[in-house]
Every structure is written in structure tokens, then in C-alpha cells.
Amino acid sequence: MALAHAIVTAFSEFLEDPAGILSQDAPNPRQRDLTDDPDDARLAYLPEDALPSPESGCIIGVIDDAIPFVHQSLTVTGKLSRVAAVWMQDAKFRKDVGIDLPTGAEWRGVELSGLLNSGLDDDAIYRRTGAVDMTRPGIPSGAFQHGHGASVTTLAAGFPPDDPAARNHPLIAVSLPPRIIADSTGVVATVPILEGILFILNRARRLCRFIETRRKPNAAVVRLPVVINISLGLTAGPRDGSTPLERFMDAVSEHGVPGLGPVHFVFPVGNHRQARLRARLRPGETIAWRLPPDDPTINAVEIWGPPRTPGASGPGPVLQVTLKPPGMAPATTAFTVPWQYSILSDPGGKAVARAYYQPHLTRDGQWRDGIVVIALPTCPERLGEPFAPPGEWKIAIPRNAPAGIYDLSAQRDEVIRGYRGGARQSWFYDPAYRSHDPAGWPILTDAENGGRPKVIRTDTVNAYATGERPLRAGAAYGRSGRTTPYVGLLKTGLPGDCLAAVDRSPTDGGMIVRGRDSGSFGLASGTSLAGPQLARWLAEVLAGNASPLDRAAIVTRANTVFGPGQDGPVAGRDTRFPEY
Image 1 (cartoon, rainbow, N blue to C red):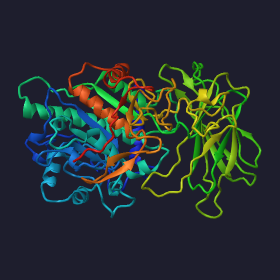
Image 2 (cartoon, rainbow, N blue to C red; image 1 turned 90 degrees about the vertical axis):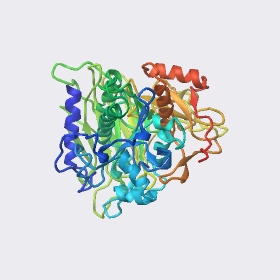
Image 3 (tube, one colour; image 1 turned 90 degrees about the horizontal axis):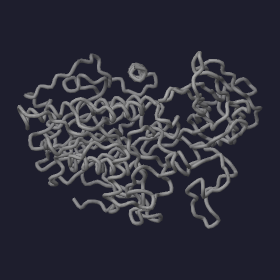
Image 4 (cartoon, one colour; image 1 turned 180 degrees about the horizontal axis):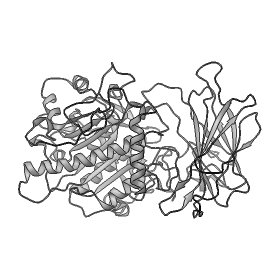
């Protein structure tokens, strides 16, 4: 009940849109129940000749931006779309299809097949469907030729149109609002991602019922498995699997969805092992937090205390934190009850940072004290506005804090490719941390570093992916199979559950990926490209009627198929671009 209440509350707050994420014409003014009429061609999920086999199909779901839903690799012979449904969350609301959705526009496979056979080129279809609308505020992510979602989607679900396996992998996709992707901190992304998961599961169930009416009338229920790839991530969070998003995904995978086969989630393990965004302190210890100059965006750090049994009156004792900006005296918070906040002001009385006390209930009923420190931009937007002093801040855990390890994470603050902004990343500094050895080679683990540095490489995993069920994908070199240096590490020190070939070698980085339009391609890198490769492989395994698998069983099967590499099983060692 607590999880359901948290999710419903988050949905309600998001639809009020206090952060200005949605365009004014995106919300549904009158949300209604959806009734699919199998005789209405506009509502049909797929053309007859693109329907998957009821016995050997597997639905692939993708949540990202700029979904290339008319790309040739997402069709079968005859220009018939394999995209059963695509939801553009920030597009102008459609009044006829997707009336049950809170915002945006939904398009389905039969409609898209008609557009593909109408003589329009890809760009014209994107404009016709509202994926690209240059008259609306903000930059539409669908306008980018080499958007993140284009690479991810075609890696996860792209097949040559004449490949017999193509039709057994229909795609259900969600294109997130551009402002969600542009905000690298990800602080408002959870609800759109949750909505996207619910959309994929709902349409997957309806697709199964649609297949029953077309392929297997008066026969057994069609229950296709579903693999959902989410190549998004956070660098800050509790990393204990207890956020609403992680708990929801675990519940879906563990208990299943009525009318569907097994549901699995795949995430990238993350790209920030060497970024110095993670630190661990004990009571009485201090770490330096460096804020770059000329940064027009906020910088944030999360501090999480050790788990403990709750007190009789709630979360129990509160955590305090001491901050010392450059040139200022140290100041310690004085929280007395949960969900308070403190303001740190400069000698002139202007606020330079805020600290929010946010206790967190873990999956096993223990409490973790959490504090989020948010520093103002180091470059104000206008003259006279307050700003945080750039340079070396100090963060300390008081000596009288409860014994244990205190986890610190700096939130990601970068400019996402294709979006404007002057964001500059903050980081932790510890003289005991060494990035390279004397020969110039990168130091890859805390053990190789030696000593006891407060800045760590272990547990730099994507903070969305610390639940019990999702598969975490790391990146490897295609030629050697060795892990790439940037790959985040799990708490165990492993670079993910499974690896996929992304970069070709240390001196030849990246892999060739498809762009938005058919025939376009580019070069990209990162574990975001490993996730869809693992999702595709898992979908092929499930399409072969594999028995229900948990994470350990998936890793065991990957080891059997690919062979145990030095750092784990590596899929896709051949990264050559398909010739079509």
C-alpha cells in the first residue's frame, strides 16, 4: 500500500507540472477509459502480416527519447510497421487514439504502416505525427538526426525487414519529453518513466488480446513475454533498491502481469566509474567537493547514512552535515524532525545553498537518514542575484553521528548532446585518490588505487538499477572483450551482470549506430548501448520459450552462450554495422 500511495501521489504532482516539463497542448483535457475496437483500423496494433507468433514471440519495450518509429529496421517486408504502439509523452494530444493517456499522442502499427506506404519520407512522417514540431516551445528531440533514442531503439529491436525473426519482436515504445532528457540530474524523470512502463505493460496486454482475435480464435490465451530496455541513469540515490521505481519494477518482474508472460527490465550499469562522483565517510571525516566556475546550473550532493531500526516515534535520530564553502566559516545543520530544510547564507545574508533532510524507508523496514545539499549556480543568470562561490567546498559528518558508513553521491550535471546549456560537473577530491598509475594507465579499481581513499570507484552503478530483478549491462571492447574503463561498478565490484561489445578498442572508441532516418548512422559510446544489446539477446532467449529466469539464471545462461570472459559474459563481439 505504501508503494502504491507513493506512486499515485507522484503521478498527481507530476500532472500539475510545477517544473514546466510538459507543453501546454500535451495534457489530455478529459481522460477516459480505452476501448479497443478490433474492427477499427485506426486502433489496430499491427497489420496481419506483421503479427508475431503466439508461441514464439517476445515484445520489446523501449523508454527513451526520439524514438525512430518509422525506421526501416522496425518494419517487415512490404513497409509494414513492427511498432505496435508508440507514445510521445509531450506531443500535442490526439483526440481519437490513446484517450486513456494523461498526455501526448499515441500512434499504432496499422496507422504507421499506412504512412510508410503513402509515399512520404521519414522526416515528413515525423512531422505528420507530431514527433517533430518546430512551432512548439523547446527543442523536439525527434529533430536530432542522431538522437540517443534512435541508437538505443534500433539496437534493441532493429532487424532487416526480410529477417524471419523480425516479426516475432514487436516494439512498444515511449518517447520522453525533451525537458526530461535535457535535465541530466534526472530529478523529475521518475514519474514519466513509471508512466512509460505502465503504458508498455498495458499495450502489451492489449496486443496479446489483439493477437488472439486475429491468430488464435477460440484457443488458449496468448501470453507473450516482455523485455523493457531503459537506457537512462542517475549518479545519485540511496542505491539500496528501495526507491518507488525500483520497487515497482521488482514487483512486476517477481509477481508478473495478468495476461502476459515474464517481464524483465534491462538498464545500463552507468558510465561514471572514473568521474569521482562517489565517496564514503565515517563520523568525523571530511571530503572536498569542487564546484566549477561559470556554471549556470545548480550542483547537488546526496548523503545517505547507514540503515538502522526506526525509533518509536518515526525515523529516529536525525543526521546532520557540516558545510564549509570557500572563504566562509563552516556551518552545521540543525534538523529536528524529518523533511525540514536549512539555508546556508553568505556573510551578506544571501542564500548560497540549501540542505533538505529526507529520511528513507528501506525494503526491509529500516530507516536511512538522507540529506540533499543543493548549491546555487556559480554563475548567476542576472547581475545582483545570489550565487554559490566556486572552488573547494568541504562536507563533513559530525563526530557524534551514529557509527557506520555514510555514502555521498554528486548528482550528474552535464550538457546532454543536442541540448543547449552551460552545465558543468562538480566532483569530489581526495589526495589519496589516484586516477592513473606512473605509467599513465588508468587505475580501474579501489584495490589498484591502494590505501583507503574516500573517493571510490566501487558502487558507482546506475542508481535506477539497484533493485533485485533488473539486468545491469556493462560495456566491453569488441576486440578484446575487456571491460571499458568508464563502466560503473556494482557493490560487488563487478562491471554489471553481463557485458556487451560497444567500443572497438582503447584507441578506437565507439560503435556505429543507426540514426533517426533509415540509412543514417553515427558513432556513439557508453553503456546505454550495452543495455539494448542485452535486451535484444534476452528477448530472443524468451522467444525460444525459455523457462522463467531470474537475474542469476540469466547470467548463468549468458555464460553458457557467450563463454565466461575476464569480467563476465560478453555479447556482440562483432560490432560491424549490418549491411542493409
